[in-house]
Image (tube, rainbow, N blue to C red; front, side):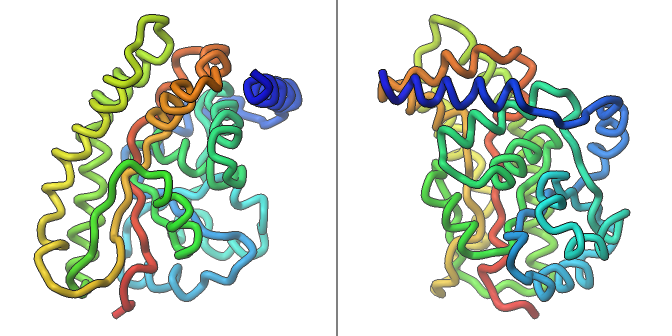
Amino acid sequence: MNAFINISDSFNRKFKVCVMTISNMFSKYASVVKNLRGVILTDPYLDSSKVIEWLIERFKYRNIGISQMLIGKNPKFFSRWLNGKPFIEIYHPIRETSFLVGVLEDVLGFNDYVCDSIVLSSIYISPLLVVNAELFNQILKVSIDHVELRVRLKVKDWKLHLRIADYTILDMYKQCIEDAEKLWSLNVELSRFIKNRSEIVGRDKKRYWRLSSGELSEGVFLAYFDAASLIAKKQLEKLSILEVLRKLPIDVAAGLSIVPVVNLSCSVYD
């Protein structure tokens, strides 16, 4: 009970003091979402220039989103890559989805900018591209499955599998969101809900057969992160987190898709 009180109080406090300006963001969302090919996540206090420049040089003409919150952590560092070079600043299309970030902070204990980037990846139907190994491993630990990398990737392989990651979230999105909306039902069977999400991922993993066909040990290429399953598990642990989630309108389920999280640090940059 005390755990629930702490979560609920924290959520209410964040809900009341949130001052993000989201007016007219839905029209901007509509203009961006179609052409977005990923959402970048990096530690704003570490110099990730090398990886970002590698990404820019080899994946031209791809629009990559970066959260307003992440930019705000280190505006000077990110400014050189904004305005489509290659980053596009992305926002929450409606006010309520920004409050979902606070729920995930309480569930995961992650930094706010990490939770924000995860939610926006779902909303913008785009894979999350993680620059730093430490951040990726943090997400990997709570993911529901992953794709191991047993081959050395060349640029053409990166291009292919980043495109496949894009298909991953696009193809599963409708079912994921419809399932996530069931968390607002008092009759949801949580164990079955968690199993269904795992089965979705099990089917999708077959897309990445090329990456597991070798004998090398290059790490993990991709993790499947599912905030909705984590919320369901917390509820089964008697933390009553669903009572907190249900204070939000069901529209925030748009931020609860399974998100493919790509590890950009998992191989040598050719």
